[in-house]
Image 1: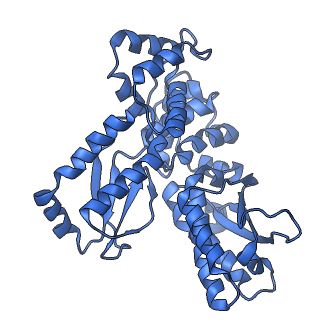
Image 2: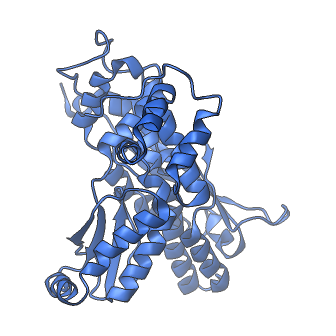
Image 3: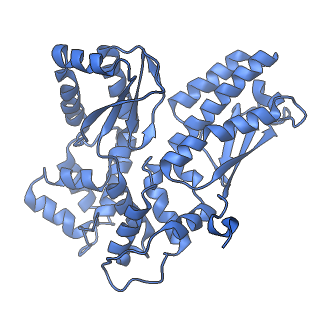
Length: 376
């Protein structure tokens, strides 16, 4: 077997950027920086794809947002034929900076390309599941190992159907959870054969099992020893108290915090990692600034922390009678999706008992629904 047969090429991930305003000149194939802009945006996604375990290479096309059309956003991004929403606050701020830049001179356009690359990355980090489509799911399916153990009936033909696998894998990816651990993915599939026909529920199991076990606080290596020692001596309790206070305010039992070094950070920078997505480098490395930014970032990422293990932990805090009723009538994956929706909408899950009582009155609370599933 030759190399081309043993190592298939990575599937392409088509992306279309429609550019307007000061970005519009870059859309012209004849512009000297057209190819640079196209390649920079594509390269900006490489590390994200690697972190998330998505096989593929972003292939970017730049199109002109015609001037005679009704004025719209400065850029729109479509990936795998799915229109991306404009992104969160960071993407909006970056687009505002591009609008102020004004384009024109080459130096300005090069700055715009850097901002364009960063903006597109932020948009993709807000909705990373768009990067996975059927070609990528088929590629993943070929990489999965047939599990040695399985439950829920005889193991069907392996690997699972790519369309169902696509729907299941999009669930963890949408939460910023990596699917790079193919062995773990295979094991979860083998232990939950009965859910192969319910890919959304299977996706919730994958998200719960593959989710990060901590929230990372990332610091520059040179300052890591001194900073962590100083904070332990003069304010180390601040982080444990932040975790307690955020848990009370949001009603969600939080994963622990973990300090990690990051060689890409400058001496005065820090960043966070919720699930597996790296956050942007933030400047001003002081205890007060770090705690303030942690709180802001936590609320923006809250819904991504609502996964099966956290929901099971929350259920342990309510009265046993109510917990038993919920377990009997609402499937755990469905409950997780509903609580995540509420966390995204309200920014919190306080008064969980009242929420559960409301859900028991809703039509989807079917009697006899299975509540416990095999996470790993």
